[in-house]
Length: 229
Image (tube, rainbow, N blue to C red; front, side):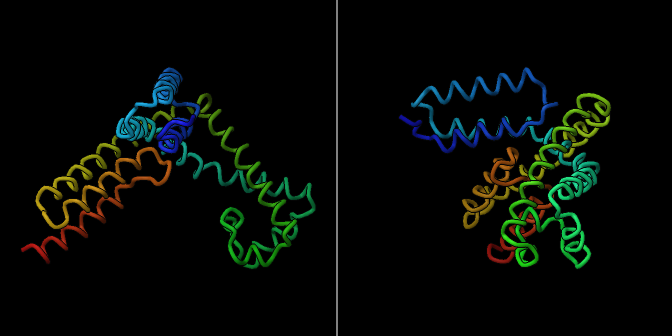
């Protein structure tokens, strides 16, 4: 019989699985053990699973962000090169480069943009998407390896930078949460958005950014001043 909160448990498992390989192995192992313990107990309240999503997500977040940053800096160039090599094997490189020359975007391959749909046949689209996914997995593995090896120091520096950024975001979330106590009209709505931001540390359904929190603070500051003063 499935756990009564199977879906929420799956989100928790996914949040741990999203941790990069250079996330400390002992912590990853402990997190997986904690997840299995919750999954084995059908009486586990959903609030406990949700709490763990936030707790584990917060711990993993700086590592996820460091990986994403390195991927942006180094991974995109590698992916483009590998993709062209793969498409050349499939006889699609020339048409793909023609697509880019006419204003097509690499992002359209992943997102299925209209121009991509029109330019390539269904079979060609399937081959290109398949190649793109394979190349992305290859580059992700390479980045994991360099973070464990040749660029371990750079990765550790980025992790520390994101830990500092995380503290800034935490302070902003706390400031936003405090606004709920000062507003009878908007308090419940603010608390709901605070919950979404905290869950965003896991990056499973959404992510949390300083800009998003600042945007909500500015918005609710305005509506509170307008309607409650």
